[in-house]
Length: 247
Ligand code: UDP
Image (cartoon, rainbow, N blue to C red; front, side, top):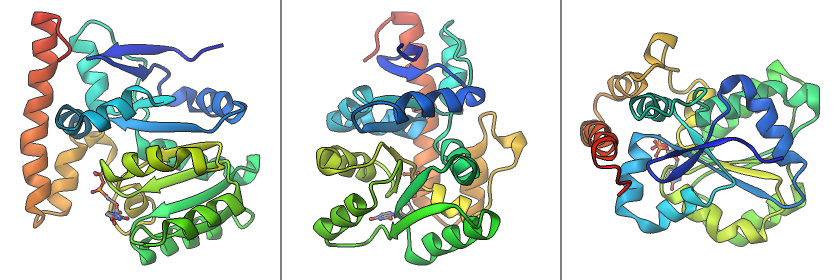
């Protein structure tokens, strides 16, 4: 069995939607080799056009998860996706079902206090959850980090270093890592820990970025990011639609 994908501007994105996250998990947990997941959204498309290395990692991921912009773009192109699976939703799904299903989890990334709050929150909610270990995202000794991951041998390794750092780290280390599924989830630890607010439901159909930028209104890099990458995304989709070219 292979999982359904749709070609989006030259990227094979998973065509399952949130309702089928379970299928995705079952498929890759039963795979004999470790799997690497990445996420595609407007910012990632922009970065990947600039950095061929990132582009290749995304294109060769075992699963490339589409966020909301890609769902909208896929409709414009006449090849609509079943729905999004954003990084944060995927991670939340795993955390919410981990206790009941016995999933084991390793967390790598974000600031120490953010990671600790995340663990506290989920241990409080699910006392038997198996979050085996946590290493913050500014930890300097990669060998020790790898040792800790391999000692834990988790089902899920969540990597939250921001892009493209997390994708480069996963690519460089994937063959040294004993984890069934590793996935780059960007700022998800900050949100799932409660340190940053979750975008409300109404924004999750294409305006999550605006909520995020308003929350961190003083971060000029975020405004710059969205003001450049969102129009760029529209341009890339329309260019593809009218010229049939992916690059
Ligand atoms: N981060 C980290 N190590 C680093 C740089 C960043 O752990 O060297 C963390 C940072 O604390 C934050 C996340 O990575 O939790 C980056 O979040 P951002 O929202 O910028 O991710 P993106 O939108 O790029 O996916």
